[in-house]
Image 1 (cartoon, one colour):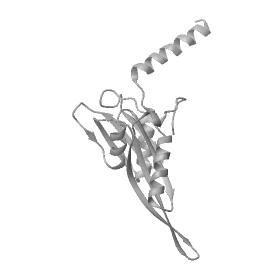
Image 2 (tube, rainbow, N blue to C red; image 1 turned 90 degrees about the vertical axis):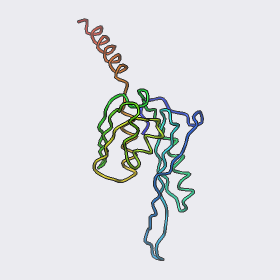
Image 3 (tube, rainbow, N blue to C red; image 1 turned 60 degrees about the vertical axis):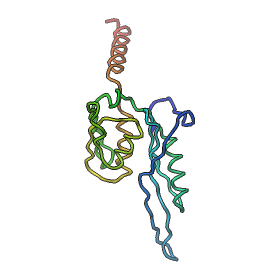
Image 4 (spheres, rainbow, N blue to C red; image 1 turned 120 degrees about the vertical axis):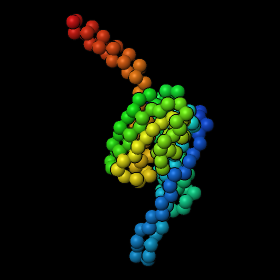
Amino acid sequence: MVLGSSKIDPSELTLTDKMLYINRVAKVVKGGKRMSFSALVVTGDGSGHVGVGLGKANEVPIAINKAGANARKNLITVPLDGTTIPHEIKIKMGAAKIFMKPAAPGTGIIAGGSMRSVLELAGVKDILTKSLGTSNKTNVARATVLALSKLRYPKEEVRKRKQAAAAGEATTGG
């Protein structure tokens, strides 16, 4: 889930874990039902780093620990424009559709469910969002992280495109 070549070292950050969801799963076997648990955890430092992890185990605390470790492995860097995101974005991941739009300072996080938790731990303070399609907490959280990972600073993108265009003209001789 981490994009780019730069890996984020979680030991350098002061991360906060937030447990979003615990699901009890029953597998029917010959002797009855075998119970296990899956946990969804979001981790972030509140200043531009966030990750989501899913852990599964026979006991709840072990599942939560596994999910936290998984979330720290999947950390991404979120480009922030002050207290909001640089531009609006629409993402579809599976049945989850996410729409995020920058908001004026003082607006707050207008989001619900697992989307709100991901944005809070990413350090976003002002944003307008809408979640369409599925209400599955895992898919919405993962789609939110994917949307945050696709964000770019517009000025940087323009500069990169100009450099690429200049390099293309230099090689073609035109």
